[in-house]
Length: 59
Image (cartoon, rainbow, N blue to C red):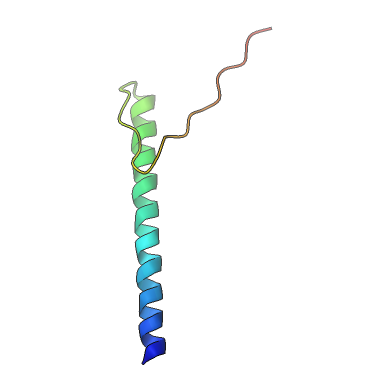
């Protein structure tokens, strides 16, 4: 019985972790699409969005 309960708790934890990861990715994708469309957009939930490096100076 304990093993079954432990397995169920472990599955719940993994499910919660994956759900949070999906939500973070969806926010990041939405942010990036908004940037491409030139609308700015709110920062992705769960942290700062990933920004591309600045352009290199011309030679």
